[in-house]
Length: 434
Ligand SMILES: [Zn+2]
Image (cartoon, rainbow, N blue to C red; front, side):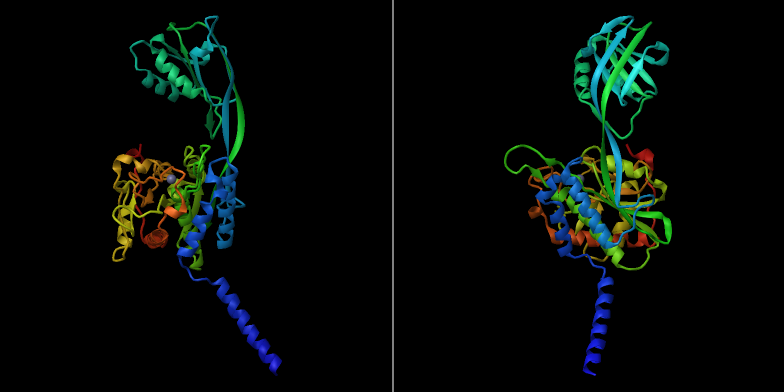
């Protein structure tokens, strides 16, 4: 009798335990926020520079967290790792001759995004000339944007500008796609037309991979996405003395933490959302925006209803804690919808107070905005005076974690009506985006 009572009791206890452990309440708490941001900004992650072992660790950590949360993979992937290749091009050899006469390599600037360029026929190229009175920079941009293979004959009057550009472009290049069809070769020469030419350029090409970390919660509308994003890369290790690790606690471990805690929050709600929610940690924002560019090519941007790109929310804004600003406020009604959503709460959203800083263009949202997505960055850091921005001192100890937690809560509340399908921000007109 006694025994069976105990076993009934333990059965109830076990069932209660099982139930409560799989049905966690949906909360955004400071403890979890602190744990995640501290891990991402730890010295062990070595400042999360692209192509470094430190960023690998960060990626592993985010993936493990996504797994624990129970996010699904993005369509077409069998993990949270959205990996892609980058090509690093280093000049190896070059020989150019015009009308049968060899040209000194110091007078040649070649932009070739493939392993080799081999031209032996004038008919295969466009020839441009830049006269002594033409504007060098305009000519350069024109030639670079031209289709096909372009030879540019540059009057020696431009030698100085030419040398500067050559110094910059001969350091090599990194590209997402090799391109053997387009190339530009600039040559300092008094010639204004050519009868014959020979150009051979060789590059050493190295392939390296980069990874975004991406997960989703499927909604009833499989192809309508609300996207939360932040970049998890930072500047890595710099210098030789003192604190050499640029931890990037605010930039942008804070935003990445927001993406991760929002993922847990929406998943823990336990109900299928109306719209599908995507959670993405971008790589290489600091190194050229490659992560968001690759991401934007893996799905139809018309299907992204809204993009919350979260940047540097670890410090309170000048207008005080519990306020955040939105870049590109006038480019869609995204910001106005956010304002409405938190009306009557202690939180407030407003337009970016630093228009001269061009912040709308200084993060991954711009890549998606150019494709028409209502894609905005949300931030709280007084960027004009912040002394830790892009410094080794960007550490967790400088963050206001209560403010950061409140900001994430406000974002969760602000996104609710977009996720439920009740609100849909107007599209950005790509014509209004540089
Ligand atoms: Zn950033």
